[in-house]
Image (cartoon, rainbow, N blue to C red):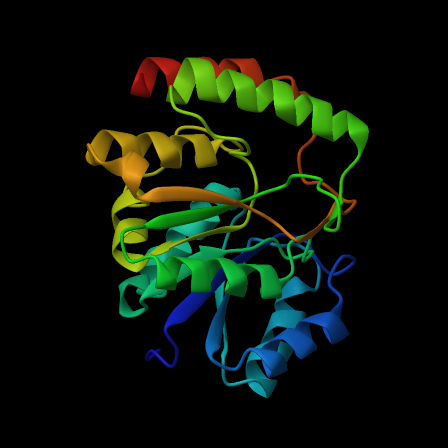
Length: 244
């Protein structure tokens, strides 16, 4: 695979057939021809791969990687970083297959990063403000605020509003460095990512920025099972004792 665009967007997929909106995705491929869409099929057992094959045959800026077994979002993205040779791009982002964050928002974040050369990582933040279109259940919102406060004050020890927002854009050399090693948690790798950045760069706080999303819509069909939800405290302890 040869580089065709400056930005590569990684989209991990696991049994997404029921959530894929093929028409919506086709519109994204056509609208953003200066972006490469890099799909990683994370060991799906449904027809996800067939959908991805259809995309890649029809659009020149769509590429697919198929993993033999399901390993979770963090490892799927990590495999994509290296198997797609992400260093060939200037910037890399990752995005959920349900388009909770529309591609237009990632492009807006990418442009902000491009215009601010001192930054290496720009993250979207799901903040409900007057005039924007951020739609999130109250339960997830309040849980998110508690979680973010713990992350900010206890684990990361620097102010951050929304660690778990999937809309992140970073320089490809930074992505290559931060994703080099496997993550120790399955669902909290965003926190690990920030801790790795903090550990590797004394000036990281000057190179990272959160900006509010204009559009974000909570989708159904979360891949997090209830038993995994209750494992979050254990995962937090693993992060604390390995990074802090």
